[in-house]
Figure 1 (cartoon, rainbow, N blue to C red):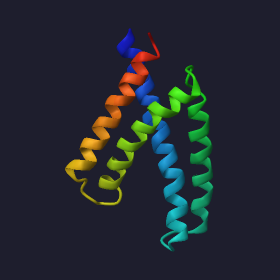
Figure 2: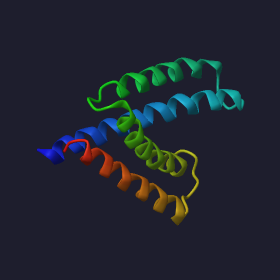
Figure 3: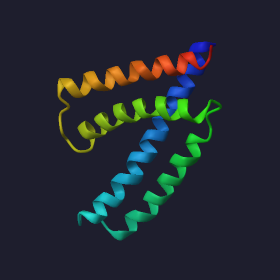
Figure 4: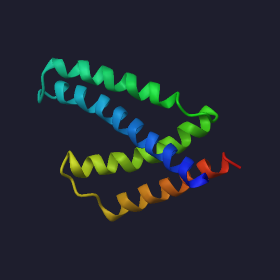
Length: 112
């Protein structure tokens, strides 16, 4: 049961990270001249979803933000690779792995 709860929390963090990154990426496309001003509408919706998703966690907000930050790091590295086409360095992957390890400690500890 503990692992199922952990998996749900991690999945929620993944959705939250994608919503945040997308909400910031779309305005960047517009500001750099690579997209229409209309990208601001889905960006605003995405950032709204990001904030709402953060409210779905039953734990103290400081723990949620700390653990979420690690998942955000990992998703940002995946975004770098899949969207920006930049191959991550081994140090990027190691850093993301260390951050995720820390997030797991925080998430598991908050269930004790």
